[in-house]
Image (cartoon, rainbow, N blue to C red):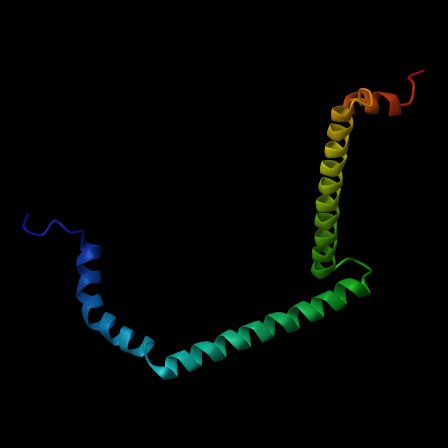
Length: 120
């Protein structure tokens, strides 16, 4: 029971020693950095070209492309932010009005009830 390691771990340890140092030397070289940069740029270029072509196909079928959906999501998020700002400003104005003694401000719930159509 001198060696309690599993068989796979013993095999890994035997290979990792010589291969690990060789791989470390390769990954720290300038050639590896250049190759990695080239691969990254190539991958990005292929992705852009694929997106361009698929966007064209979706538009030919009169369907929204992913970029169209992303733009709509950004617009909805901007509208949501603007609505929250307006809601805060309205709540602050109601609070100021109540504090000035101009009479009780209608509660938001009362305002909603007044806006509903009467039930038949």
